[in-house]
Image (cartoon, rainbow, N blue to C red; front, top):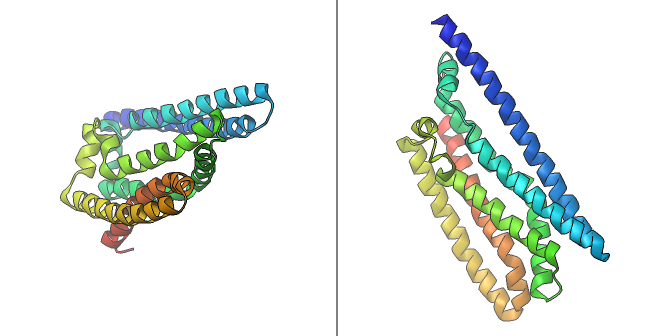
Length: 230
């Protein structure tokens, strides 16, 4: 039994190393995307082309990092190792809830740049870099909503068994209801902006998608803290 546990611990250490490398890939991709966006906004044609390519490559690296991270989640060895401790399910759920709460804060700059690019595009002055930047906000919002709904763990049966209990499902329902309320209120505001100035309504859409997804993530985190007595 101890030999199996030692083997599981070795496999778990390798999995953690892979996750760190995947996280580094995502960080490098994000930095490259930022550099590409700033280069694309320069007036020189060569710099704009290189910037657009870098922004696209950086975005691809971020998406690849997210996909690889989903496929390197906790497995049977992780569960075997962690079950030697108490409260593994609670720790997994807590880490997930904290990630949902911190993701909006770490993505604010992307939403700001996306809103700025959407304004330029709506005004007829957008270039390829603006199009790439405007697409980042929906991607970030979609990733956050996929975490709230559990879509990102759909293919992982072991992780689903940890995160598909009745309490977690009630968290999801409440979080999505909060997001729906925010989305409805936001659409009224965006509609009013569109009547006043159509360009402002287009520029507000990345922010509306982000606020809607953030409301779901923060509501989920709030419910998880309340259930834990925090």
